[in-house]
Image 1 (cartoon, rainbow, N blue to C red):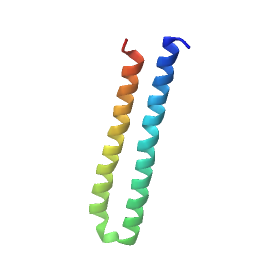
Image 2 (tube, helix red, strand yellow):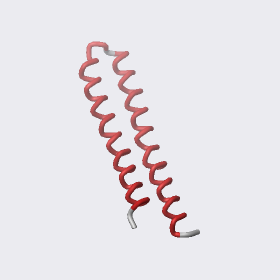
Image 3 (cartoon, rainbow, N blue to C red):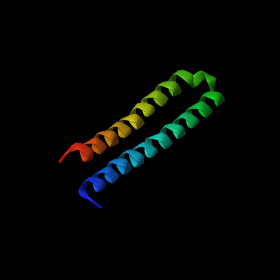
Image 4 (cartoon, helix red, strand yellow):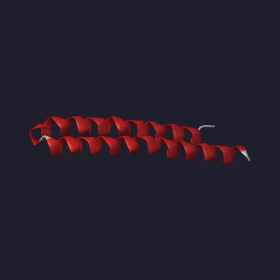
Length: 76
């Protein structure tokens, strides 16, 4: 394998593994929040605020992985 091929492989793995974790985290957070809202409708505003905050944290991890992947790809 050439140096360019290894960089492309690392780029793909960084994006792939960097997107799997946040995707699973967002799915679990949404599942838990929807169950909590269904069991206690009075707590919807509190649960919804915390759910949106957790989505933002999960997405920030995916953005960090994307930035690292682009650094791997384009940095010499």
